Every structure is written in structure tokens, then in C-alpha cells.
Image (cartoon, rainbow, N blue to C red; front, top):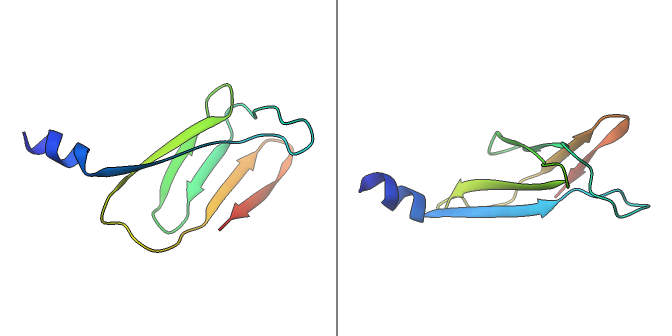
Length: 75
């Protein structure tokens, strides 16, 4: 019961990492929410998600890394 209650109080951040020129999803990109120290790896189409406790407030930076491409930070 406590576990289901905790899961119901989570916020989810979802997105997709794509190539800026072609719009194609970048498979298995590595993503980090810097302040929250949460990590994720995109799927084969570049989609990703982070589950965060709903009490998390404020801003953060999303660091995105992909082989053979420069690292990017989004705020």
C-alpha cells in the first residue's frame, strides 16, 4: 500500500533525442538530470523518461551525450 502511494506521487519527464539535421531519433543517447543526479538511456528510437518525486521543484539542467557528437546541456 505504501509503495503504490509513493508511485502515484511521481512526476514523469518524457522526451525524445533527435538529430537536429535529419529529425531521426538517436538510439541509446545518455541523459542526466544534473541537479537530481538521475540518469536515463534512450531507447532505440531516442525516447526517454525520468520519474521524479512530485515534491521536486525548481530548475535543472539536462545533459545529453551521444557517441561522436558533442555533449549538450538544456535548461
